Length: 348
Image (cartoon, rainbow, N blue to C red):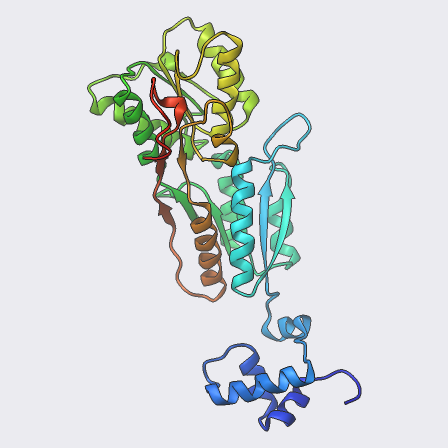
């Protein structure tokens, strides 16, 4: 056969119409199994390759999803939280399994990304990771929804949010960490992380921490909370601020593993040993958490499941089907950094 093989050639060899070939290649349930097998045999024999561009134009979709990963604010604008790199892998895999390409774009929070992606038609929908200050981004999310852009994000599930999100049960995770500290005999537990509605995930972790204290009949002490962003440098500085206040503490709950690792370094610089002098825990269970010394107690967020749900929710929106926000369970992982004189339990 001379020239490029077309769907008409497949139809002729399989003894069906060209429209039946098109339906079969799209996976339509209107094509019975026997006809589908004949068409596939013809495809294999002629080594036919689907023209994705032509197919997309006919279907008015690109067959591509966009993942916008926001860089954290640093001096050189290059910091990516390793937690999001783990989720990036799960989203890439889930997209491929569902027959979609994934366009990955690193964005600066200050850029007009919401308008750029809505107008460019580069993808059928958008997944957002690591967007930072929720209150600063909320209006942009609302604009995306108002103009019909299909969009889902990883983040807190909030009552008044304009979009679909997938997040972790941060309240339960925060409660579990502080309860664990108190089981180790701690009563003066510091919290490092922004405890405000600007960062609702950190805020829920703090609220869980406060609830655990109250359940034990303890009151939170404001001086034991220090704002911090999710970087090692911010964790180091927050611990320095805590020490400068001159108050006693026997445990530190950091709102992320990166904050915890920075705080661990600051404590070491000041002659405080983890866990002999101060117990320490983080949140996220990034790969580095189990390799620091001592290994870091933390809260696991299931990035594999999160990636699948994010992609499935976005595909539901693209297909005009209902989609709902989802909250995944948090799992406390207990390691040596929060155990006094005992071996690593691995997990709880």
